[in-house]
Length: 144
Image 1 (cartoon, rainbow, N blue to C red):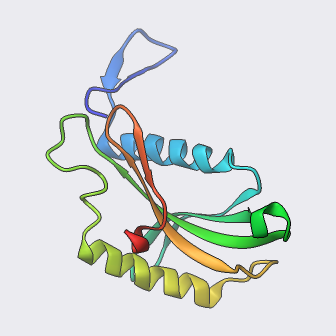
Image 2 (cartoon, helix red, strand yellow):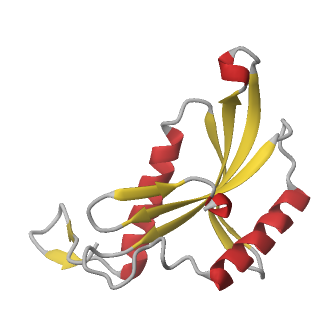
Image 3 (cartoon, rainbow, N blue to C red):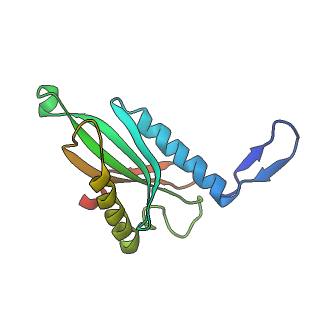
């Protein structure tokens, strides 16, 4: 993300994006990725509590029984991380024990207040990491 330029259509002036602006672009790109998954629906974005923040929460329809047994609902919590191409640490490596504990506690609070129309069969925590050139999508980080 380092050196990403934004052009203002009204002037010929370019500027380097701030860290916050880059973060928003990366998060929007991750959101768009999940919205392209058939049967996915965005439930929350930037869900903040005193315990922490969840970047994205999706409800995803998942086929069971090889597609013969119908569908079930899975809640997918997504932590989005962005790093520049030459960063000393990948986005995935930046999800440390402290961050995972905050996410686990925030997810528990979200679930205690969840009022979805359908009851999820399972939940998972995914990490979407942008390294400046490509995405790395790790599904269910709790299993890694």
